[in-house]
Length: 283
Image 1 (tube, helix red, strand yellow):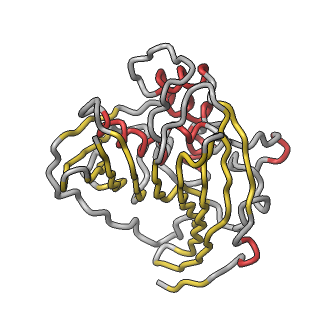
Image 2 (image 1 turned 135 degrees about the horizontal axis):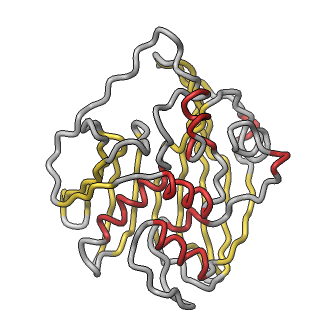
Image 3 (image 1 turned 90 degrees about the vertical axis):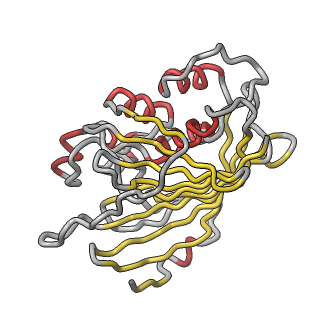
């Protein structure tokens, strides 16, 4: 697989966003994830990875692309490939975000790499985020975005590995369009692959609505944290391998590898690995 560095002038670009951790959105995320919903109170700690529902840019409809994303060429480079997906990320947690506080995110373009594989061209963009409150850094995050071409005609669908690890704990997820719509609304994500079935089928060739990558990661983290009330997440790394869709159930798995280190993974209805993650914890 060949690689090169395009859009070098975008590397180092930065932007700062502000948001407020309000009780309303926190309550709605509990409902979206089908979790017991205590009434959020000022000072309550936000569950890990829920920060993804904050900082979305308020882009007017006239400035959106056909796929529902903001038009390209603003903060992110103008990559001319039709598919855009959340490819993975790496996060370090220092302190919990709390309900009722103002938070700030400083983002910068860290790297841009172009690769050519058997299914066509791909461009990977890595964005570094630092999330802060008035007392300092809460989370350091690297967010990987992949842009890719549609599958060329005559090219076979890539083969995927069947997960071979045995899990210590697992949870079956039954996706549905309402959950995808709610998560899109909470994260202000207009990407049509998550709610427009005709667009998914006819424009991007997907068999169903695409389950959000960060929502899959959130379920994996929540599965781990549900095993004990005294687990605190200190690090989380994840990589999306293949999409999950709303027309089949899938399973979240977890296994402790060494004390405080857990391997987590999601498998589709065929048993193929769709996402891999590793979490570090302390008690």
